[in-house]
Amino acid sequence: MMVLATEVAFAILSSLLLLNALLPEPFLWAVFVLAGAQAGLFALQRPALEALLPQLVERDDLTAAGALSMLRGTFGMLLGPAIGGVLIVVVGLPATFGVDAVSFAASLVALALMRASPPPIGAERPSLRGVLDGLAFARSRSELIGTYVVDMVAMFFGMPQALFPAMAETIGGASVLGLLYSAPALGALAATATSGWTSHVRRHGLAVILAATVWGLAIVGFGLAGGPILAVAMLAVAGGADAISGIFRQSIWNHTVPNPLRGRLASIEMISYSSGPLLGNAESGVVAGILSVPVSVVSGGVLCVIGCVLCGVLLPAFRAYDARDVKLAAAATGGEETDA
Image 1 (cartoon, rainbow, N blue to C red):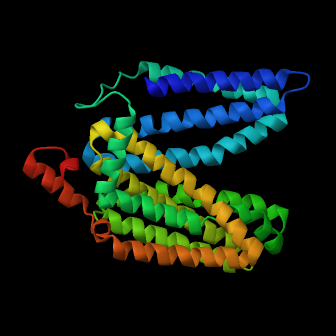
Image 2 (spheres, rainbow, N blue to C red):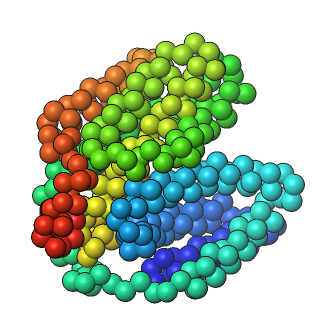
Image 3 (cartoon, rainbow, N blue to C red):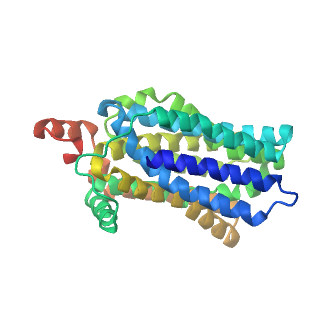
């Protein structure tokens, strides 16, 4: 119900953007307000979608399902802006908003055809106490803490996206900037499209640490790149490593979090992977202003690698997390894997 309700709201907001664009003098403040409302709706819908996935597939298929979910998101990041840009040029901005609003008909029909997912056994009504219970559970599981900390370290120190325009000036100019922005998504697409091997990996915690370390090393390579080809290649490697990390982080979440807590924990996860890039862009900009752009990028990548290594040392339970142990514990107790 939450997913359907927020999807209806998204369609309404897109329609309002269309109406504003049709005005003789569109209101700029309306664009900001509606965009902010869309961001708020996304914060409501995403946890509900994350909580729904484990109820739709078998537990043995959760890693593969996570990879498919990552592939879907990557396609959206690649094709969405490109299609929008083409439509703006071909049919104009108001018509583009109209296409966006009409496109929600497909998702609304698909959601309406789905069977309602019953609440998990033991689920409680939303409350402040429920949020606190979710936070307490997250603190009690070192494997969950590990996923949050490693992702925050990687994004805070190794997210130099705000510096892409400045980097582009030194390696080819404006023509390179678009490639820099699209390279991580292209790398993520390649990684998720070839991610069948991830279903055979059992040391998910170690996989997250290694993938985040590769991200940091690739960012160092990006900062040292003297030309556009190497810079784009390094960002593609970084994007692929981030996608692999995301697949295994999602698998740990799906195998560890009890069904009644999935929505609350998905909200915590969303804070983790949405705030990290914002803070990382701010950090890279501050360091670049004090020192220089290349130093900011390279030092951030180095600190990311150091932080990932420290996470592996200081969180041994996370590093040793093995999906096979969780399944064996569940089989022995006759309960959910999350009981381990």
